[in-house]
Length: 98
Image: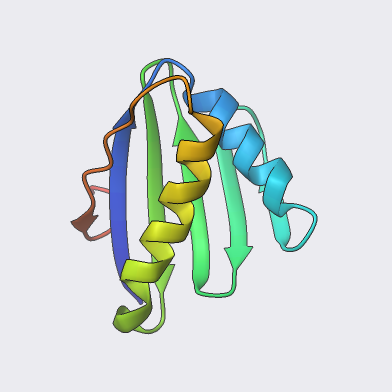
């Protein structure tokens, strides 16, 4: 599995996590709480974790060629919810730190 992750600094991490999960819950299998979400997207799973200052996003794709598009889809949706603030997505290889 090919993975990418981004840690997005925002005071509204939980709000964006829940909005994204609710938005995609109509089309895909989704489970979430205010601090953790899992979305089964066609590219692969999207795992979200929120604390007071950060939205952590982890994407896993079977095909590495799908990762750029996967990142863009997730990023575009979150940016739409966060239209009042400028978010920075610094994507990097790999999953959760050990």
